[in-house]
Image (cartoon, rainbow, N blue to C red; front, side, top):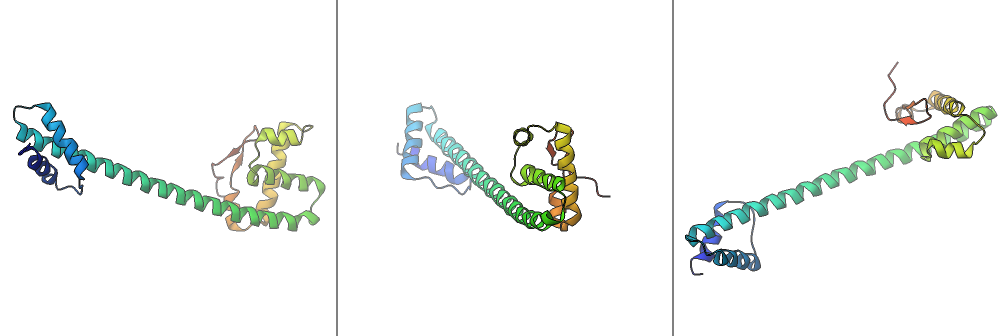
Length: 179
């Protein structure tokens, strides 16, 4: 016991890693060394201290990296949500401005874009809202509504709406080619 504690501390400090054990951790490490009954307990205590320091530094590094990644991910999600809210408001104003000027069929096309893009309704949910329309008809309305909005939209809203409507009526995040 007399030589175990100093050798554990030497092992910890030999790594020069930014870890500081508390008394409970040191006592745990010392008890491990004593219970192991190693032939060369001084060197074993040094190795136990060194390994603890390395393991602790790796753990702290992992925790810090995970927190950084989480913060970056949350910032990106918040930015994406702000972008969505901005584009949604811009599209709402544009649709309200266009509604008196367009034909009834075009109003439905704009409504399709609103449901799919800004309310996040799936193709099945839209099909439930419009039960007497075929899939290809809903897809065409979505494409035409998107085109109608793109004509009058700001460049930022155009970028946001630059998606492809798949044949099944789904939305693809793949941007349209610039022409």
